[in-house]
Image (cartoon, rainbow, N blue to C red):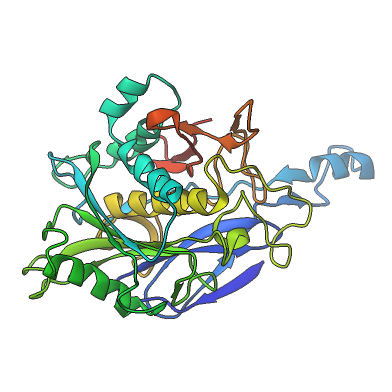
Length: 358
């Protein structure tokens, strides 16, 4: 059991990986919080038997610990249910390769079901997102199935420098609206993506990204805006924020062989973390939606399913995945342009279990 301390940000949800003989993924929201990593265990006891023999006592004393049901309670707040869908605005901060930008953008574009119909390959990204449409608000409205990229802007020079705190991330979102790069849209998600050489407060030390919201102000045109931030872990911490495509031997299991990333370690790390953030944002945009625990320390749609990507997963093992026969890369979802992605399991409110694609 490992205790992890993280400095959070009020109203914000951090993604962070915790190691305790295995990788685990959790969200932290709020100021300084502590979360213990718990690994499912087998309980070996002395037990009792009908004849009292040590042999039978040993057999009957072997049991599998069954944890309590995993339930994400609904807290009566709004979800992202707009009938017109969720527009995503991508703000690229720093220098990215063309391939990295295309990979992340293609993932977002792959979410909407009409793209699955054009693709014809399964399992697909839109099938993954479909689980989120089972989340309903107090009006019976479900999370929308339509997600699209409404705009992109690149701050290549890094207008606020290479060392950012969390208020700087908020400033980037505000400035993107104030400077008319993007419109003020209360139904949208503004995603700040920071480059490999940009240091963000807490990145690689306690988190891989976060989602939160801005209170209405002059720069946001009086609207409450939802945003997310994710960093490129390819250089700074691939073993921390791009597992299972990389492993840091100083903090992770020693016997796990990293999987081959279909789009590059940095790009696929960003996709995994962005997928986790978008799932949490759609179902818990204002810390009043679906989560387990308290609002400042929630398990959300994806982070409730710690480190699970395929059937049969357990701490330190991602589960059964698909393999590209040519590149040997591992994935569990097809996207547009025959892209291949690895996406986290999602908590399914219908079955109250973690649902995987493979």
